[in-house]
Length: 325
Ligand code: NAD
Image (cartoon, rainbow, N blue to C red; front, top):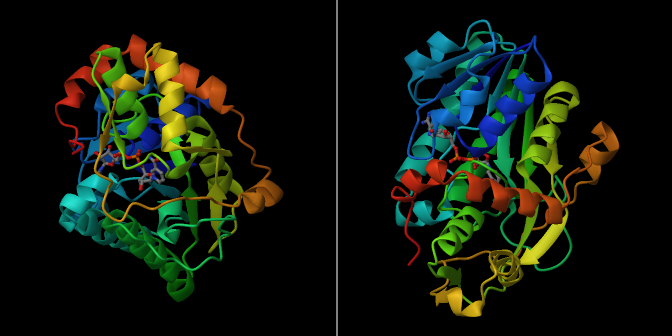
């Protein structure tokens, strides 16, 4: 199986590539990535010598470049996106361009070149916010941030190509990811790296917003299952099962750093901040046998250790991070 991975130099895409190539000497993967501020080619250094690996720098919105790279692939796994909610609040343009237009360009090229399967990686944020209970895959989409709205549009386009053209499309929607190689503007690496440098951490509002945490390696195992055995035209949730308020998460990170609440700086809440996300993961568990393998306790410890040991990775990136107010 020859896989085209868009956004493979980013946090989750690079984990997927390392995991697949690490597990299979015969695997063949082409990474197609524009290397935006969050794309780091060094995330792929460990697989650069694998005989099945190729890297092509390019923009998913560039139809000619996509048309050149697509032929010969059996599957597209589409991670490439503008992915940071705060940036989408500051300016939605790049989100609509990359996440919506870019997805359409890829879908058209995959269709033209007869690619067997298109796996579209999405987010639980497309459902909006839920105060109790959990969303199932049939839940209506009600995104609140421009980021989530652009992802919802892309999901619907992908599913429309299945219904209209009979394309083999699978959509995955996951909860908040954490793990190594995450760009240091997202909450866990931002807080961990700030605390390592004795800087305060900016906590939005009262810290009461609830997120469910998924280790990136579990996410990629779930994507692999959906890619191989998911049913065409279906949506699959991938979750990690640990719900925490942002305040509880901050407490975990402070304790690991041996620091106290005086290191927390409350900042004005994010505009339109969703209170809680929660996905029901019964479908992928029952149909494909997915279950997360990494407990939050083990995963967060390993993640903090990774940031401690890889200052040279995150320090230069911090200058490019979006500021929190
Ligand atoms: P990331 O920002 O770390 O990586 C995005 C990658 O896409 C980068 O390598 C970047 O260079 C590339 N890219 C951006 N625009 C491009 C373009 N026009 N053409 C080609 N490449 C381009 O993001 P991530 O956290 O790894 O997220 C990957 C996917 O997972 C996204 O689709 C995101 O919406 C989704 N997702 C992420 C999370 C999370 O917690 N991080 C949760 C749910 C869903």
